Structures are given as structure tokens and as C-alpha cells.
Amino acid sequence: MGFGVTTVLLNLHNAGFYLLGPMILSMGIFYGGLAQIIAGLMEYKKGNSFGTLAFTSYGLFWLSLVFINLLPNTSLWALPSESSEIGTYLLMWGIFTLLMFFGTLKLNRALQVVFLTLTILFFLLAIGDFTGITIIGIVAGYEGILCGASAIYLSIAEILNEIYGRTILPIGSK
Image (tube, rainbow, N blue to C red; front, side, top):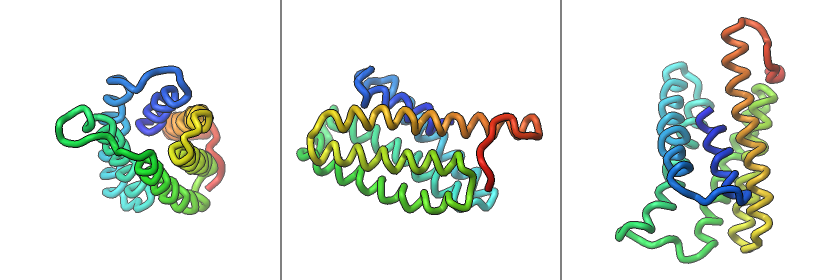
């Protein structure tokens, strides 16, 4: 849920609905970042390597993204001077996510949708930064809203299915 909600909010910005401000950055720190790191540690305790890597990595992604946006406002250092720097950052996350997507092929369909749409999102954002074509970033924003919504759906489905002890919202077979 932390990933889904934060992803929707950031991509409402990417799609042009909001400026990147305290609401999105705070969610990136706390719900996208810290909450996912905690979830990753909980997955570690359960022995779930995939969940540990996914939650801790994307939690740290959110924290690093917030710091990339906040640190230029301090005297510590300036914003990356070339769009290729951010493009490379996003490309690396896209490659990581694509590789993680392959791991979902043995898991449920809803998780596959989350990782596939996230892979597409990272590559669209990287292409947008590399090319400077604004419309690509806007398209990425709408695609990112879909990605975040799919993560919210999966989160709610897993909770409701567990609470009721039966399938309330389908997630696809494992």
C-alpha cells in the first residue's frame, strides 16, 4: 500500500495535476520509504527473499528520490547538471525492476501487473529524461497512476482475502 499510494501521488505530479511539493515528498519519506523498509524487514523475518529485496529496495528508492529533490535546496550540492544523470538513475531502476519482474512469474498475476507496469514506468521516465520530450513524462505519469493503482488493488486484495479466509478480490493463481 505504501508503494501504491506514493506512486499514484508522484505520478499525479508527472501527469501534470500537482507540483512536486511537501505532500508528495513527505509521503515518499514515510509511506513510500520507511514503511516499505519496515515491510522488507518483516519479510526477511518470514524468510521471503523476494519480499525483502523488493520492499527494502523500493523503500530506499523513495528515500533517495526525495533526497535527490531536496538536497539541491541546501548548500550541500546542486541538482544534477544533466538530464542524463536522472535518466541513468531511472534506467538502472528500470533494469532492476525488469529483473525483479522475472521473479514474479512464479507468483500471482496481480504482482506481475505491478512489476510490469513499474518496469514500463521507469523506462518511460528514463526515456523522457534522456530525450527531454515532455509528453513522454506526461504519458509516464498516467502509466504510473495505473501502476500505483494496481499495487493498491493487490494490497487491499491480500488483506481482504486474508481477513475473510476466501477470495474476495482475485489476484491470480500462483
